[in-house]
Length: 422
Ligand SMILES: *Cc1c(COP(=O)(O)O)cnc(C)c1O
Image (cartoon, rainbow, N blue to C red; front, side):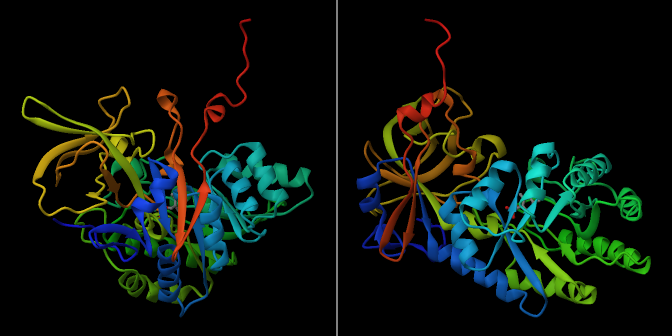
């Protein structure tokens, strides 16, 4: 049987472990479904990324949307990371996790007035604006607060990142950013915008990108703009190239962070300014698994189904992107036969599946399975559909286990509901 390659999730005596702890031991206490993260993985991935760019002034702003648990954000803050937040809720979380002003950048294609106001109140390093109308609004709000807003413009470089259409963001047909001409026009308004100081230029071309060439193409295009502006006297402090680096879910041929650095460093060096990175998935996806228990197995005609206690409400990626997540037994038993089965959850939707036509070790009621690579865009997309309570989250550090979010209670499900009918 093929097991997912991971340094922090390994088998000892045929039992899956996270770092030094047996997964079975963890879920004996927490129940299932449960997310389990390895702190060591977060740290190793972060350091590897940071090291790859040691030659140039740079800063990583962890994209909190990939996994916004407070302890996860805090882990990155302690490593020296900043946080890229996508909403006032993520801003709230980042501040709760201890992020300092100047260590935050605010993104979103549709910021509300309140989000802009909060960004200014908390003195974020940059607000990344995504339209001309937003620029006017930021200017107006900053004026009313007697502040000068530090703003970057998100440019849509119109490159094909060759990823799933739902997570491609850098094509002109996508809703993100402004085109090159609009960006130039906005930057050139600097003198009229009294309460804005343009400090950066920004892009983010998509997610789960598995080849380097779209990055190189986009960075070249953005650098070209950067130099045009420089010539006109608009000196930017930050050049932000976003996140989007693909990871291995199955057998994708990905690139290493060293290769990524080697490809773009020559361009970045020529800029002579601080480079900002916003990795999310790269730092978190393979740091986590979702553990689920087999409830039933059955056969309809010739098709095998494994019904588990995790569902699309816990891990949505297979349903919305048709995403592949490796599934492997917590306990390997070489004597068991292999079958091809759909692994499905209990929710009343045919879209509620975790794997289709998957070759797996035959399992039975009570067996535990690991859904791999679930550390990014997993728990953050969980919902309460079917009045399901969202799973617990555990952080493992060596032999230490911390419950970093308890399983939701029934009270969570009714939170703030009022009875209208007496
Ligand atoms: C989602 C997002 C990221 C992180 O993307 P990953 O693919 O997880 O690295 C970074 N920046 C912005 C603006 C984003 O929207």
